[in-house]
Amino acid sequence: MKLVILDRDGVINQDTGDFVRNADEWQPIPGSIAAIARLHQAGFTVVVATNQSGLARGHFDLDDLEAMHAKLTQLVEAEGAELGAIFYCPHGPDDNCKCRKPLPGLVDAIEAEFNTSAEGVALVGDSLRDLQTGLAKGCRLILVETGNGATTRAQLDHTPGADAEFCLAGQTVTVVADLTAAAELIIKQDA
Image: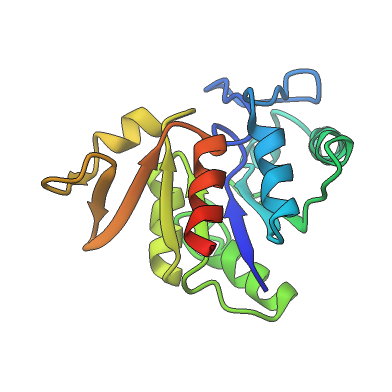
């Protein structure tokens, strides 16, 4: 199975910085839906893994979250593709759960659902916690500069002589502009 794991806010859709609270506020980053479709058409199962602490904090309810995910799913389907699944952590930062990134619980659930290992799988995120989750599971780390990506890039160690390569705890992090560039890189690496 060819699997790709994507963060949601800041990678697929605009991140407001103050929680995306409903389907009207949920707006895709230009090109992100087409990038998901491109990955699907190249034979990848595309899975979303996202922290959604706004549920625990009372910023939105489960119906709102399901409406946001229905909008994402419909947009992807309109491009002739599909998402493999959407996994989310509904807990707040103080809930001590195992599924809130940077802990690997969401990726553990993905591995169980698809009966596969995430080792070597491309994980695309815009925050340090996304990368730390992928690092814990042996994923290939790709940082997009959308969302919080530029801030996160500043937290990484630059790899000398490599424009787009950085390092997190000894593992290479490839930095790209957006999900479109990430999709092209993943497809090229798989060829």
